Image 1: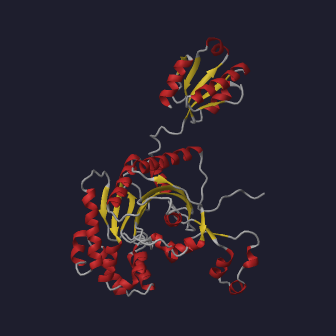
Image 2: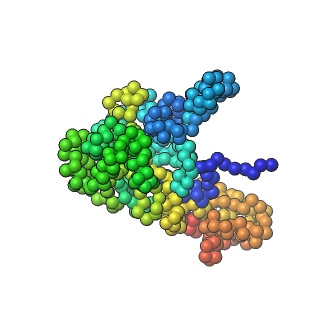
Image 3: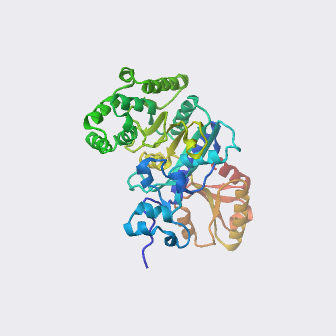
Length: 449
C-alpha cells in the first residue's frame, strides 16, 4: 500500500491552524465590510480563454490546466502530438483552468453582471487560487487571496481608501509593515528617458525581480528581451532615485510627470488622516502583472524577512478585454498564507485567546452521562462551545483527553453533583476547582466565551 501524500505546494491544516487562519480572514473581512465592500464568489475554474494572456508569458506558464471530460485524447491535435508541441496539445485537450488570481475573474464577473450591479461597485472576495510555481517558504501552489476592488471610478480617493484598509488590517493583526507605492506611468516615463519605451513590458517584468535576483541578472534578463546593456544599466540607475530627484529626471516625459502628479494627489487624501504604518515611495516597484496602469502597491513586513504580504494597483480598462470598455478599477490583495507565516514566526498567535472550546463535560456513571448530555444541550443553546466525553470512562482517561489544550474548563458530574445540582468546575490550565450552581456555571462560561 502506497504512503498517502498531497500534491506539492499544498497543505493540510490542523484544527488550531484553521482557527488561526479564520482569525486572519475574519479580521480582514470585517475591515472590508466596514469600508462598504460587498462579498462575491466566482468558480474555482474559469475558461482558459478568460485566463490566458492576462498575466504575461510567465503567468501563462503557471496556469493549472484542467483536462477536458471523457476521452480527452480522442480530440487531441494529432500533428501536435507527433511534434510533441505541448502548447498546441494543451489547447486541444483543455478548455478550463484553475483561477490564477481573483482580479481577472472579477473583471469577467463585472462584464457578465453589468446590468445587476451599480457603478462604482465595491467588492471583496476571500477564496483560494492556484499557481504552478516552485514551492518555497511563503510560496505555495494553492493559497488564499483576500481581494478588495472597486470598479467604475477614476477617483484617487479609492487608492487612499485601500491604503487605509491595509493600514487598519495590519494594525489590528499587530503587524508592522511598509506600504510601498509607485506608479506605472512613472515607470513608463523612466523607460522613455532610458530609451526603452518600446520594451516597457520586458523592463517592468525584469525590475519586478530586483528583490529576488542580483542587479546583473536583472540586466541580463532585460538584454534577453531586446534591451541593450547600456540602456538596462541606465534604467536601473533612474529607478534608484528618490521621489524629489525623479521630478528633475522626468521633466521631459509627459507620462512620467503625470504619474508623479497622481501620486501627489493621492497624498492630498492620506496627509489628512492618521496612518500608523510607513508609506514609502519606491520607484523599483513594478509588480509584473500586465494589467496595472496607475498606482501600484506592495506591502512587506518590517519584522520578518518574507516576500510581499500584499499588493495591488490601478487598472484603467481591465474589463475591456471582455468587451466592456472604459471601466477603470483599483484593487489590493492580502497574502493570507504569508501573513500567517509572519504571525507564526513572531509568536503573535500565542497571545490570542482564540480557538479553545469553552468546556468539556466529564461524567462518572451512566446517569451522570445522560444528565451531562442534557446540560451540554442547554449550554450550546446559550452559544457556549461545549463538548462531552462519549462515555463514563475512567476519570484518569477522561482527564487525559480533556487536558490536551483544546478545552478551557472541565465540568465534572457524578452522583453528588446529580443530587445537589451543584457542579465541580475545573480550570484546566491552572488546575483550580470551584463549585457552581447551573446559573453560576452559565455566568462563568459566558464570561469567557
